Length: 217
Length: 217
Image 1 (tube, rainbow over the protein chains, first blue to last red):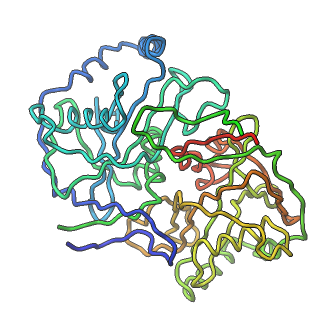
Image 2 (cartoon, chains in turn purple, brown):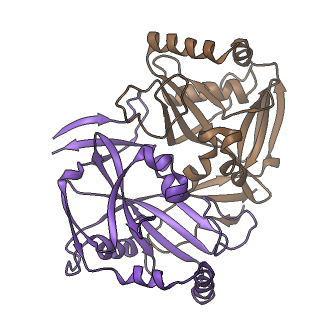
Image 3 (cartoon, helix red, strand yellow):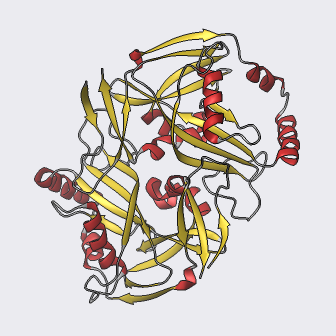
């Protein structure tokens, strides 16, 4: 094992948390049948329909909470984020909405199994959900997310929580056919809010307090 | 003591770190003679001169490390960040450059005493420096800062580390006459990268993983 890059070499009292990442080539990628969730999303004919559905869900169940995974790999000696691409121009973190009463960690593990593991996996793949690195709120059904509670004092309608998920040195990924799994470099994310949206574009910042160790096994 | 607002009320396994903040009206503000550091800054006639000075400092001492404080207060039931305003249009976090061999925490305490305490304070004011919440790097003397190491593999020239500094329920601030101390709401910071720069505009995101408790004493 060789550590070829260590972020932030500083003096003394600096106990940066260390995140080990492994080369993309350590991982194996295959596909499985399309996920029904995306099919449902396509059927949402208009944004107005979508907002209406969110509103009726809010009335029935309260604030919608989404949990999403930040998964990192190394490519060209630089950390890359794993993203799912849908319909060519939509980028999503692996994750999704919690069921009523479900914990963040259980919900995220369920979503990672459905989006990144074989359907007959039966929870054999372990997902190590680490700490929450950021939270975004929507104060309305059609607004952009903000990284703070609505200052109006209005109840938030949606909350998206990002969790750092540590990958083992090797793993199989099994991705639904209607998604593409991409590895995107930090520098490209940081500068492309229009392409990826505020939440994904902000991830390099949220990770900047960690020391990222690139490990070659 | 009454807690009137608690960020992110979620189920079970969510152990968000809690940050207590107090009303702006709990703090007292007075001024002291102008800081010599700002005078020196004004004498830097051009940006080119400034870059030249940074380069010669880098050649002599290596990467420049700055430590900066994120100090929060409550106003109108919303968290506000304390910022120093210089020359009407420059906004800075309280903090500054480390001396050679100085630790982050010692350096930040020294800077907080010089920028926010009385000159005869003799370290009586205690500054509680908490965790590092983010780090930004410059790969060159005149470039913008980025929240990741240069992907070119080039050695970074400057590193800015943001520390959360917890304020007690009450305190005197003594600010040099050439600075104005402002309390700026999260929502204004997040949307004004052009006014405040990327580092300050990104602070709401870096704080989004904390639960902010507004405490009225």
